[in-house]
Amino acid sequence: MQACNDVAFPYAHLREAFGKKIGEHQLVQAKMADMYTRLSACRSYVYSVARACDAGHVNSKDCAGVILYAAENATQIALDAIQILGGNGYINDYPTGRFLRDAKLYEIGAGTSEIRRWLIGEAINKDFL
Image (cartoon, rainbow, N blue to C red):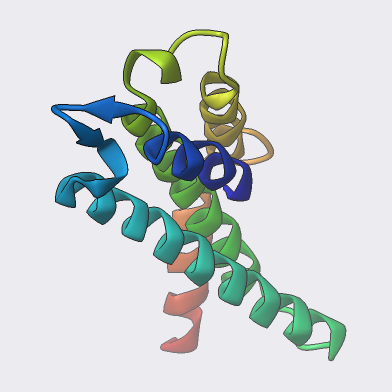
């Protein structure tokens, strides 16, 4: 996720369209704001669950939740980075295509997002049975 920001943000302030840097356009700024916010939220969630695990408070709901949340946000951030780079984001001259492939693997490797949702749902149900 950080790598996507590291590629997309400087690019947005180098590439010009319609007489100004694309990073000056409000919709590109909004996309960058979303990317930054998603990354910050994921970091906080990961660190929070990691601290709980270090303290011996491990549960499947939080572990599956943090993986689900971070994986899906990684994919969205990679898609946003590609969008900011436009056609350049899609070709192999820039790493954003690889970032998307890697991020998508987080959603399907070692358990799909659907399985993670099922695990979380099962854990929530157990709280009420």
